[in-house]
Amino acid sequence: MIGHAAMRHVDRLVGVPLCAFLTGLRRLGRAFAGHGAGDGGEVRRILFVQLAESGSMVLADPAMRSVAARSDARLHCLTFARNRASLEIAGCIPDERVFGVRTDGVLVLLVDVWRFLRWARTVRIDAIVDLELFSRLSAALCFLTGVQRRAGFQRFAGIGLYRGDLFSRPVAFDPRLHMAQNYMMLVDALLRDGPSPLAVPEMPVERLLPRVRRRVVEEGERRAAQRKLRRLAPRTVEGGARLVLVNANASAMLPQRRWPEARFVALIRAVLARFGDVQVLLIGAGEDRATTTAIAAQVSDARCVDVAGQFTLGELPALFGLAAAMVSNDSGPAHFAAVTDLPVVVLFGPETPTLFRPLGDATVLSAGLPCSPCVNVNNQRRTRCTNNLCMRRIAVDEVFAALCRVLGDSALHGDGARECAETVAA
Image (tube, rainbow, N blue to C red; front, top):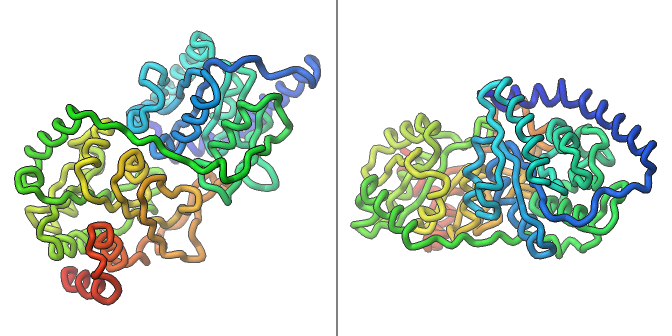
């Protein structure tokens, strides 16, 4: 498996010269064809490119739905194979229209890139929206498809990384707006009449406000989730306990987003001590079991159950529909919950909620340190920080108080929350 660090290294070493070379070819072609040449006619099949971030699939949902509202185009998606299932959460693009690029090795990756270029021509894609934040290789890949109408973020006024001049509908990324709003700008640039040197949205910011489509959970899905819970955590179903989900994990791409395990342990103990009708489920993927198992062992309470790896991404909406609340690091599950009514308490540190706040019922907590956020579009969302004070400065009592408010115990706040959390932690 090619890791995130290796991907970024290749993107820098190979992507920069490749984008420069392809930019030269594009400008040479335009010189011969004439600058007045258009970038295609009617848009019938649009490809969205979102490779690495599974949570961004939900953030892109408003942009995808705006396409459906403004055109009859059929939507397709290019993503890494490991993130393919995350498209099921929003359900905007059916699986048969998704191309998953495998990252099991360099040779496999190259073969799938070649297969994708052939697939794009076979499907007859006629427009592309590159949702990637300044990935050079995604920009080059979009250009190599031969599709004439391409919208993507382009470096402007010092914001963003160099990725050449490869988009017919380039958009200036705006770090003051939410990521979902920036995605909406890409769609606006793609669908408007006539290309421009640098697309500026013609609609006011108010029109860019994102709305996530709620996922309809079928009764069969709900019953299946209940059966699984009955097997994994019988008290939840048979005892009528309120379910609180805890996601203590974050992707390997940015481990600095993790709140310390000891804080999660103290939080769960405080919740179980305060609410006798609550059961906590530790959720995550199979590879997160090291974290969830350790937390469950330290809590050492029958009402705290580790179910990491037991629910697929497609089953999460049904699970969320049965829960009363969730506490999560800034990672995929916090965004996936936006397709349901589940209230979420989300912990932010190295990234900013200004850009990446979940679009659902989210209470965002951040220490607000001057060094945060330390990852942005100008450093390819990389950081050398090995001491994530921005996460460790978020106190247990602060998270506990926020969760208590969600659970309907607004009386417990301030010193009361601190005393309760500290008593249980001790």
